[in-house]
Length: 503
Image 1 (tube, one colour):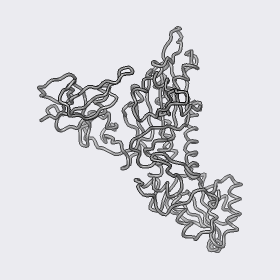
Image 2: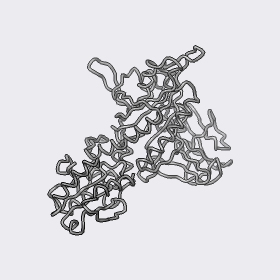
Image 3: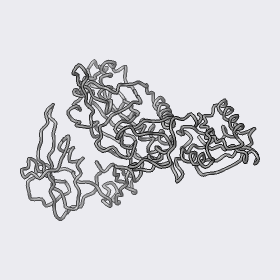
Image 4: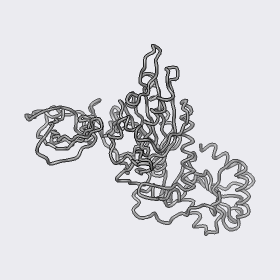
């Protein structure tokens, strides 16, 4: 690809109000452009990197026996009503009405659509197990999109869905995805760790999140260096001392969904003054769709934290509703917990019969009995992964892409006196199957070098009168900056050998 033909331009400065360094570089290097709050266009370089990431994902999903399908972005409301999530999810779910008055929704996820497909296609235990996946657009009407692609409203995800006859089958597919996800992130060049997580709006019995540790993350993790315990703060447990001095009360209005009706209850949560309330835990105990603080006097329910001793007031329920904090004691080994900030880049869920049971996705077993299909749901944020890679692989000059996900592995620069040789080498590299970004623009050397550093392709080739006098082409590795001069006659062999070893 010749840079003189690229649609985008590089920017000397990032647009105002951009929050994080990786996103600033994606904008400046011409990978993405913002269309609206949380909505982006992916230009040529960004799209090529996404394609590299998706190719790795497809290889790993195919290796698990996955079948690639494509489910729609727009769903009939009836599917979400059948699962109950139409009533459980509030403004984040994009709702619309077509010209015939039928209610629709934009896909926030695809569990309902897959369950609907399964109830049409799966009839017998002989058809199980199954694994289907797709890479598709999602819409979540987030009220506070931030950090560019890290928290956007329109985004792309790899989703896979397992269908099994029993929990043992689900356990196997869950573990297979757990292992495959680590392979995907390793091949893309992003370090992650897996933590216990809240099932959230997905439902089910178990969930893990794959986290990229970074100060820009919105999630707080609790980690134990003693035994390896790892959990999102939303679900993290900790050892509570037997005696707590002092109490505090916090009042909430809990919004409950019963069938298609929403009800409200005023809840007073009581816990030690040393603890903070964990609203996720509280919401699960109450089975509440939403909590909001209130100063109302009348209380429908008194909920007391299980670590509080000596409370003499009213008690309707006792449960773990306290948030773990830095320095709290690990329940497994007694060592102090530490906190870390992170971005969630993937999650896996044991859905069980959460969707198949409510939507009638059943199969007939060997005993001729109808049973609900046991489901699993697994997802990686493709565009969020792009953002995290940009955050992780950068330096003061710009992006530093790993070979496997770089939009092009080679950046060829033609400077004065080397134009004819550069054009010839460009054609030779293409014929050898090497993808090249060729800077053939009529620009000063400083501009070309700055743009090469900003875009961050793995291998830079500079052809100039000076390099030819020195004996060939100046070769520079973007990560580390090592330089060499390779003869023109053997350059293609040099490049292909380097790329093969770098992968």
